[in-house]
Image (cartoon, rainbow over all chains, first blue to last red):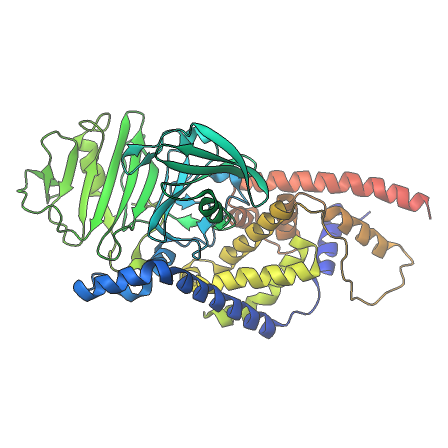
Length: 346
Length: 164
């Protein structure tokens, strides 16, 4: 009697057989790929081109290829074609600070901030000069403590029915904006919110989300050392000021507290300090409250370790350990931005 | 390796894999083209990966699962069979058809594991990398898929042969 595994192998080889025109396949794939690239660039033109041109006239280019636009910057540092989107793996949403399990059609808006922390994945878009925020999580509770520009978002007081992609959704109205909320897949919730957006505007953004793609949260540095028992719990990239400036942050958490490792480009934002501390033989400045430690001699970027109140639970020694092991990438060479956020090897 | 070189050497294998994942000849072509189009956009990053093939296969598996979840349609049995008809005096061809009908209704990740193991001949560690799960999970999917096939195939075989 033929074993099921042997039968299985025969059947699969049988069913997969058949000629494939490799030349035609390459031609179609290349043509489709080129259209995707063009679509990304055209979709960004309205949002990014005017900003880029206006800035380029007044400020020397700080980043190579400034004319490429914010969208291509996003594509270069944030693409993660190998990672599954929320459609394929809803269980992964909010579990990995390295990855956001969705992306946005560039015709809908340009990402200017993206983050994965506290079980929530966030992309903030610039759309016709206004900010729209997309949050995704496996539990709506994760949306309750959202901060927008340092202001706690208010819970909508009224909810009405609408639809997104034919699925039931709710529109919530609060004093500081409007939100469309729905569940596109089992166990996944999405909020699309804005201050001045109409319901139709927010629905248009919602229907322009790509849940079968993923973004990488990639910053211009990599951690190689963590305090015992600590883990990377969050990541944020802020490109609102692109191309003049951008920043990346990584959150390190332990049972005692959370520390934020933050890099900003360009570096000349906090000059004039005299060194009062050393990190692995490098000049540093320990703030009087002992809640922030800054590397002073880093020429390419401004780099600090900052944590809550007086480094609660994570002390100065922990901050020193982490900063001593930071491996910096060239902020102007986007291809050099490392992944993952923590090096698997020292 | 350029994108064109990759498609020339590995493209046909990708389409054949897609045929088994989708159980739909036309959908397989479309899926492979779409995945390769996305790979084209990100080729600079992909070609730097240790194993670009694993990378692209992961894209293919995820794209198929996403499509399956989005459409939630019954797997099409409208399989365009261009092979010439052969006499099937010993019933083996009919048996293979019945087994195929059971394979295509397995959950997508179980089917993906069986295809990657028994068609692509990959080890569990590589399959785990493609599916972004542990090797233990791969073995669990395989075990469950095979158990289902054994049980249903045996039952179907008994029914079919009793009618001959």
